[in-house]
Length: 120
Image (cartoon, rainbow, N blue to C red):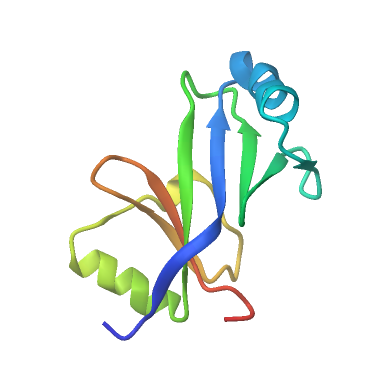
């Protein structure tokens, strides 16, 4: 494999509507993490060097965590994952025209965004 893959900085927590407000209060008021809202309606929190995004999803019955992987060659990395039998799951959330990456799922069904940042 020629692509380099590293851990990203974003962690997304997809939360059902009936748990969303309590989850926001937990991280903001109980844990005391600093929130940011530059991608509203999503609310994020500083989690050390990472960003924890809390996304409300009314279609879910329970929360899920989604992780991010960075690569210098998104096509090479996605080809590598495909060759290794990793499940692609691009239908979970549209990434938009021209996005350099895609979605994969690990054997425990944890979604990962594989993306090539603009400033690699």
